[in-house]
Every structure is written in structure tokens, then in C-alpha cells.
Length: 334
Length: 277
Image (cartoon, rainbow over all chains, first blue to last red; front, side):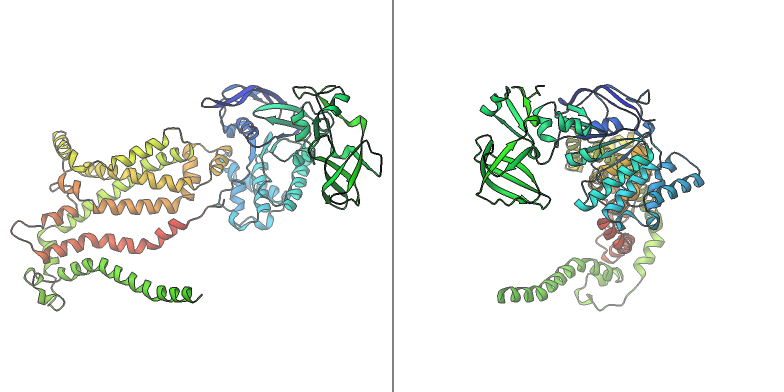
């Protein structure tokens, strides 16, 4: 069981309040992702749950128990750090066994659990090596191994993949998801990468300056962002947002439309402009378009390879149903 | 290119030569002391016997027979070892706290500790003698151990702090998550990871304690007197007995030179011991 409830949790460092009172519930078995730009307080929030930082106010309840005064190890949580934080002086086996040794388990139980974790994570061949002799991906697996042997009620991941190269990151992402499917344990995952958030989460928590901007499933956030910040943060490339006459036509202060919701047509498009940079990816083409009269640069995603080059005139038709309307405060108008 | 090549040729020859010259200049007094220790007091002051003389062990036998060298030596060992251990026992938790749980005042405290080294020792000499005599601590091992460890504590804490700072905080936090308490963090993570640094600190502190003369000479008479006091005592009022003095000095610095020689490797290892980042 791993239901985590935060109620009016706040955190200040000295006079600076980094997290104003905030409430959030993470259900048992959920894969929750905290996402936001750097400095938004997502890691701090995770560390508050872990117990590595003390809360300045409010309560944290894990499985019905108030844990504000409970030391980290007694909260039944396991954490995977960005830097892996392996013990460099111990072998992989000893690293994974360490939390069990601290919990004073018998040697035979420890061996059984370590071997099981090692085979789940394909670490059998590396058990006698030291972390220094492993690649980044293997170190990350050891860190996960050290977390799963404890059989925690929830896993906490603090940007675990940001030290890995792009290809390895995609692979590890899948491994973590498969692990979640297998264990069905609550996982809280912190990242600044919205793609990671979209692909992994059941529930995304978007944070800015310590404030929760929106909580929802990836597609909820994609389809109905509650404000301009979430609208431009979720989705890649970013949503086009502009003000002016076009917005007034839709009875809004500003409107947004995603690059994939604008169609490129041969002629007589509702909008037109000049192609600046064209990124040809094969499967898609991203156009950065100038002189539309809407915003400085308009981004459009066309399916397949569209043969338009720098300086060409481009005709566009936005899909009327896919506009997002925002008021003066940047909040969504429904 | 030609200039660069010439320059490197010059530095290939000149730099080692310069290094040797500097090394010899530094080594000469020690060598001279060693030579003199095998001369009679009469020969020692005669320039014509600088290198050619009849070696004698008289000074050494005299030292062990008449001056009770072994008592001074054992006092040196007892006080230096105990002071080093005490300084580490206090310094390790202190540096740990400052490295991993710093507060706003940490930097100021570190500066303050260093500033205590700036106080001229002579300024507190009379209060120290007066106080230690009046509470009966004068000329005791306890006093020497306390003084030696306290005067070295700032350096011990600074050195350990620098070594500990290199250990990623994440590793300590991972330990916390895995169930370690503060003592466990120190024992299971900090000491194994900073072992090289702690060893170099210990070695250096031991050397400082062994060589300390100002306080050990002034706060002891017989019972707790160290080798520094023995050398000082041989600066005899009847005149300078260079042979005898050299023998005493050689016997006093000998152990520390040998220790330093054997621990060279340990010192270098301590400085290069790397943690996985």
C-alpha cells in the first residue's frame, strides 16, 4: 500500500518560502510525475515526502500514518537519486544488500532478495564489481535494485535519467515503466522533461514556483490545460499562443493552438507566412514561420516530408475545434 | 616552434638540476646534524673535521645512559598518539556536521577556528603556567595531550572539512534513506570514503604534535617531558655541545622521518582517493 496525502504542506528556507501551502493526493499504485522548470520546487517536494527535508507546516500522511516526525528510513519509501548515490566503496552486491543489512535481516533472506533483484535488473554478472567499474545505465540499475529490495510502499525518483545519454534514457524509461507494471507500487517521479512526464505518468503534477498549476492525466493536460503556463509547458513543440485581433475573433484575451493542429495547404489558407527554418525529420516536418501577423514565430508540424524551403510562402488552416482560449489572467476559458 | 623546442630542452635539463640543488640545500642541515652526531664535542666545532673524522657512538650511549632518552621518547609517543586520536575523535564529527549540514554560521565558525591559530602563543604563556600549576595539571600527560590536540584542532577540522566536502551529499542521504543514523553515516559511509583523507590528517597532526616545542618545553619538567624538552635541555648552560646536541636531535627527529618515509605512499594515496561521482 502506498497512498500518500499531502495537506497544506509548506516549506521555507529561512525567510524564503519555496513551497506555499499545498495539498495533493497520490493514490496507491499510481505513477505520479512532478514536472516543472528548474527551481519550481519539485525536488524539494519529493525530499519533503522522503523526509530528507523537514516540512515547515502541514502534514504528510503515508498509508494513514502521519510521518512529519518519522525519520526517512522508517517511512517505508525508497529513493533513487539523480547521481545514483551508490556507495563507491562497496560492491554491487553490498550496495543492494545495504538497506537490508541496516534493517537487520538474516543473511539468507538478504541473499535471496539481492539475487532476485539482480535477476530482475540483469545485474547478475556485475554483483562483485564496484560502482566505479559500471556504465551509467548499470549504475542506475544498481540504484533501482537498492530501492526494490526494500519492498517499499512507494518509490521516489529524483530526475533519475538526466545523467544518461538520450538512447539509454529511452531504454531506462521503458524499464522503469515495466517495473511499475510488475510491482504495481506507487511511484513518484521528478523530472523537468515534459516528454518523460507524458510518456510515464498516470498523473502529472505541473509545478511552478512551488505552486501546483494543474494535476491530471497526460491527455487531460494536453487537451485542457488550465492556464497558459501548462499549455505551453506540456506538448512538444510548444503551443503557439498569441493575442490581438485573431484572439478577439474567438472572444478571448489570448488564444493558443498546437503546431500539430495547423494544416499546411497548397493555397488560399486562412493564414499565410514565410518559412524561416524548416526541420525535416522524415516522419514530420517542423516549420518555423515568420510574417503571419499573429506572433513573431509560428510553429507548425506537418506530417511526412513537405517540400517547402526557407523563404517560401506557406498557407495554413488552423483546426477550429483545437483552439485554446485564455482570459487576461492567462486562465482557460471554457 | 624552434623557441618552444629550445625552451622545453632547457627546462628538461635545468629544472631537474634546480630541483636537486634546492633538495640538497634543504637536506644539508639534516645531513650535517647526522654527521655531527657521530663526532666528539671537541671535533664538532673544528672545520677541518667537517667530513673526515673518527666516528664515535659516544654521544648516543651518553644520551641513553645519562639522559634517559627512552622516557622522553615514550612521553613523545604517548602524548602525540593520544593528542592525534583525541583531535580526530572531536574533529571528525565536527567536520561532518559542517560539511553536510552547514548553517549560515558555518563559514564564520571555520574562520574563527583558523583565527585562533593567529594568537601569539606567548600572550597566554603566563596565564597557562599559572593556571595549570594552581590546578595541579602542570607537567602531566593529560595537559600535554590537551594542549597538543587543541592547538592542532583547527587544522584537523579544516583538513577533514575539505576532504568531506568532496563526498557527494547524495551518498549520505542515500544512507539516511537506507536506515543509517548519524553515527552510522559516519562509520559506514564517511570514514570508508574519506579514509585516505583522514589518514593524511592523522599523519600530519601526529608530526605537528611530535615536533611541537613551545608548549611542551614550557609546561613540563620531568614527568611529561617530550623529546623537544630533551633537545632543549641539552642546550647546556656550560657551553654548546654540538656533538651531543646533534645526537639528541637526530634521535628526536629520526622516528618522524622514518614514519614519513613509510607513509609517503599512504599520503599520496590519501590525496588521490576518488569517489564515484
